[in-house]
Image 1 (cartoon, rainbow, N blue to C red):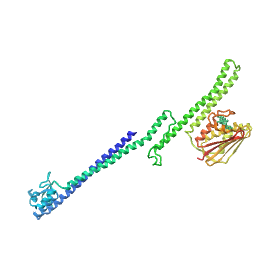
Image 2: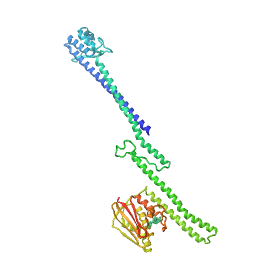
Image 3: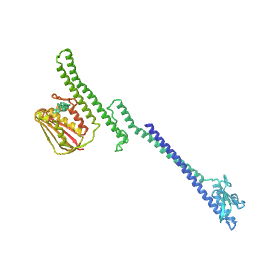
Image 4: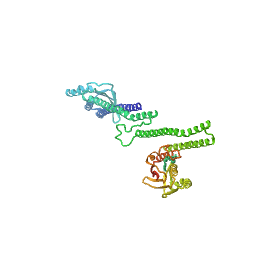
Amino acid sequence: MRTKLFLSFLFVILIALLSNLVFERLIINDFNAYVKGSEEDRIYWIMASVEGSYKNGTWDDFLLQEAVHWAAMLGFETYVTDQNNRQIISTSDILAHLNPVMLKRMASLFELPTGYGEYTWYPLYVEGNEIGKIYFRPLKRLGFLPQKEEIFRKRGRQFLLITFAIAGGGAIFLSFVFTFFLSKPLRLLTEAAEEVAAGNFSTRVKLNQGPFSKLFKRRDEIERLSETFNYMVSALQREDALRKHLTSNIAHELRTPLTIVKGNLEALEDGVIKDPKEVFARIKSEIDRIIDLVQGIEDITHAEASFFKKGKKEEIELEEFIRNITDSYQSVIREKGLYLHMEGPIMRVKTYPDKLHIILKNLINNAYRYTDDGGITVSWGPSNRGFFIEVKDTGKGMDDKEIKKIFDRFYKGESSQGRGLGLSIVKELVETIGAEITVQSKPGKGSLFRVEFPAS
Ligand SMILES: Nc1ncnc2c1ncn2[C@@H]1O[C@H](COP(=O)(O)OP(=O)(O)OP(=O)(O)O)[C@@H](O)[C@H]1O
Ligand SMILES: [Mg+2]
């Protein structure tokens, strides 16, 4: 990751360097073109002057001398030929007749009397007729002007080099900083993932590690990834703890009935018990307990799985929904001599029906099981958070010590004939759907279980 980031930064720097070089070339070329352009302007100006010295079929010597003189002043060694290619005037002719002061001045500007390089020639026209040619070649310039041009070129190069050094150096520095700080959270994540893979589920990625994290209010992708990672590891940790707990609970719960089965079979074998029917009946009842336990384990596994798979919310009418559940208990409740009351308004709510069904079934089942006198009241209604359902009984009740334990897996009271899993399943489902469960109970007075459901 770091190497890739660093390489991509280097690539960007390289592109910057290349574009800088191209830019420098372009500027210098433009400048050279400008210099050349102004040279051409001068040539056309001189040509116009020379052409202007041709009048009525003859050359005006004075004007011609003047034009060639100006050509020398503008930096060109020239000579002019007529239609017959005869040379009629040249720079050296002019220089020979120039006054000494003027000559000195010119000598300070140009290397006299001859220029350098090849001559280039241009045809001269007057009224569409060629009147001759003019030959040019540059005089070597002395003094400030060529130096200034050279200085400009040099400065341009220096400027571009300096800007490149600043930008390139900055980019390299930033690439180090970014590579380090950007890759740091990813490195932490990788290390954490390796820890988790090695079985250490208490590992968490620490958020907001970067020096810039305080600057930005919005969380970036890596922070969100870290959060999701932490959530995932918490879920794994929870799963792992549940699995370990469940395994030891199951082992414990299975040992008792299996020991009884084994003991009975041994007693039969040793002839201690004579009546095999009695033994079979006991073994059968223990096997029923084991089957019941397996069913319970299946239920709790389902409830746990629902933590990851909530399903879809549906709209239901509460009274109708609750009545469907209580109906199956009506006859046994009446048989036990208990009453069953239902109180609540007509109201429609959005919830997870299958989970609500399991929750209510367990609460009503307990109320029925642990109540010998009086009866059960199921009530519901709107509440601050959304809606509530209460299951109240006039049964044996519980003390505070017991209340603390009732949601633990496999906890069951002395009078219980069950598996001790009902309320732990309820708790699991209540948490899954974002509801809350509370208990009020007094020994001998009865219990009240209240579940608060969120509105949506
Ligand atoms: N309404 C109640 N009144 C009094 N005690 C209760 C009530 N509900 C639960 N308890 C106590 O809490 C314990 C745990 O309840 P839980 O429903 O988890 O298990 P269980 O009823 O024993 O078995 P099962 O797994 O079959 O439901 C019970 O054994 C009982 O002692
Ligand atoms: Mg129960």
